[in-house]
Length: 210
Ligand SMILES: N[C@@H](CCC(=O)N[C@@H](CS)C(=O)NCC(=O)O)C(=O)O
Image (cartoon, rainbow, N blue to C red; front, side, top):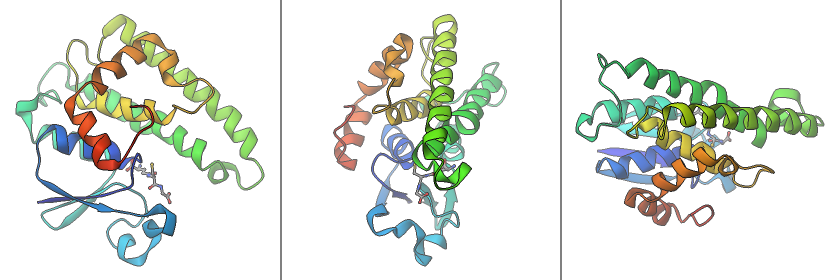
């Protein structure tokens, strides 16, 4: 049995989406950010960084959204959401997973927690710089999709596209959201049409960017 510790719409969202898409039996455990439950000693025992997601598999806690996605996709090969290790597209798949995890996702952390990189009082400067870098990422990915799409790996979706769509969603209230880029908007439209996305929204009680 899998148990996902989650907060609606947070980085746990894409792991939840995959659990639904792959039909993996799981339970949900809400980590209430309002009460800072992510920093409680009980939760820190599972995830010492005090962030979501944590996925408990057979009693063992596992963290880091991108690693969880690769693991879930690799262990459910029939869904074809990650190329096998010896497939020609495997390296390109890993490149995108690492790019999203190392380059794009941390920019959102800076956008929402602007005091972290530069300390209190510098939030406006961090926001300006971060916005420019996030928009540069959308331009880069949109150009890639134009040349090699319609999905990150070409003709078929992979778990990297699920991950990308979650990150796109996070930009929905930014001055220039990811959907301002046409190939990104088209990709999100296709992924959002999946029944698993609708189920995810219902289960997390989400409404925005439906
Ligand atoms: N690298 C981690 C980042 C997780 C992360 O930053 N999660 C945020 C929500 S999107 C969180 O739990 N924030 C609560 C906090 O920092 O107190 C992952 O991808 O799993």
